[in-house]
Amino acid sequence: MKKMNEQQIQQFNHDLLDWFHRKGRKLPWRKTDNPYYIWISEVMLQQTQVNTVIPYYDQFIKKFPTPEALADAPEQEVLKSWEGLGYYSRARNLQKGVREMVASYNGELPKNKSELMSLTGVGPYTASALMSMAYHEPEPAIDGNLMRVLSRVFLIDDDIAKQKTRKKFEKLASDLIVQTEPAYFNQALMDLGAMVCRPKIADCSQCPLNSYCRAYEEGVQLEYPVKSGKAKPRTLHYAVLILYDEQGRFLVEQRPDTGLLAGMWQFPMLSLDEYEDEQQQQAYSRERFQCSVEPPKDPFSYTHHFSHLIWKLTLRIGRASSQMKLRKRQRWAAMSELDRFPFPVSHQKVIQWIEKNRPLHT
Image 1 (tube, one colour):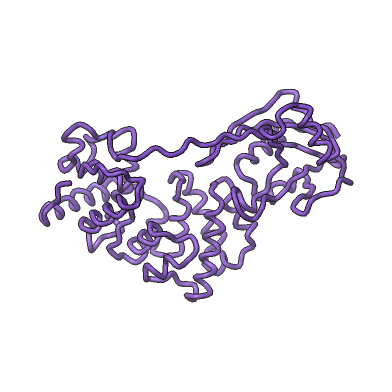
Image 2 (image 1 turned 60 degrees about the horizontal axis):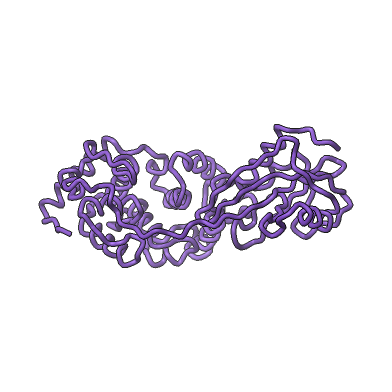
């Protein structure tokens, strides 16, 4: 990796920030200096595209305009506001961290990085982003966009999946960051990586850093960054059970408080990997719900992707009795009540199917 001298660093930053001020994205959280709002945006942006986040961010800060409002809210209300955004542990950790901030720091986000990282859900990246964007401290925020851009500019061959490589990028970015405009530096590299220096398409003719970029010079842009392959997601097969009683209410249940989709609501699911044939599935349904289940007249199947799992889902329908003994986290809900519960996207699709295909035979 070839180092830059002070004059080159100044010119590098001039070219980068000039591009950013002309071409950078105009995002709502960049219009505020409220650390609490910036924190919300950073959490929402984790593993989620910017265009998806914008309406959620706007609605969330209206519903929870202060740290105290979020700290005092019931968890189910917070999850409902997060519904559809995915990765729901982010919402729970954000609320827990905000409660800690209210209790320990009088509702104000700490200005010390180590204190920031003591809050639930705040890791090195989020802490650095908050330090630079909320408090204008020269802290580089190391994310995938930044590593992709700098790995191409400096032709860095190290595996970005390794922690020691991230340390290398921290040192490099610390040497490059503009002391007077650290937030703009981080945001500029993020935008450049999102808009120009993308993973599979590098629009080098539009890049303000092409005169510095060694990967561009050697024609190997798309070979960087170097990243070791991750494990292939595991595929699980489920039948989603639409069980309704004589009043036309649907059986819904809340997932455990820990683990995947913790605390969210869903329709009961039957593992088709565990109960492979029709006879086993019917036996399970009769034992568990005192009814049989069958596919709808027009079978409906769909796929839902998590970062580490793939769910293959199909529908089964059955009429159960309101006298059926319910488990602790189950309840009957009328169609009009379903929107009160936070459902993950995988089960919102079931609600949409029910709305489209009603009435059920009761």
